[in-house]
Image (tube, rainbow over all chains, first blue to last red; front, side):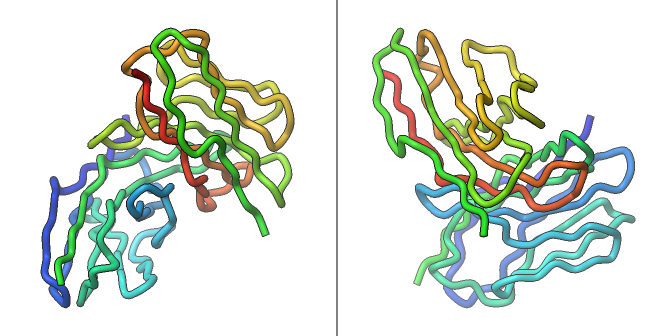
Length: 113
Length: 114
């Protein structure tokens, strides 16, 4: 079946450091890919998405590029802030009438001042 | 604009007691609706989804059930809670009809079973 693998956390960085959170997927076909963020005690919010190969999603300084060759969708940010501390989830879907998301296990990011 | 509500926000229940969590969506019609559980330190587990009134699909066998009595209302229930039911319950919606649009999440309900 479809699956998403994220790098194990937790990840701890200093403010202004470069961030990469790896995400790879296994799926038959070409899904849409998402990054969601969950701040402490809250629900999930969409951070960015890409619906086809070579698309780049971006939002709030975060970027991720849909790489079909490596089946990857790594999340990057050039300079993290304390306010970026959260859990980040990579996810995929093929849409369709059921539209089910398959999530990775999440990566906890802590940014220290 | 669309909004999604969940209540209660926090709940502490004894083992063996019943459960009812409610989720409602405003500003859209005929959405797909989803219930997820997030156990402490773990990822999201899809419990149920619904593509229409009275249509419920279960992903994981357990002592929970779901119902959709109205187009934009989704209820998660249990007759007798277990300790293992503790967790953070999230409701989500997406536009129906086979799109690959974004899935939007509610604020969640923190359930502690003692």
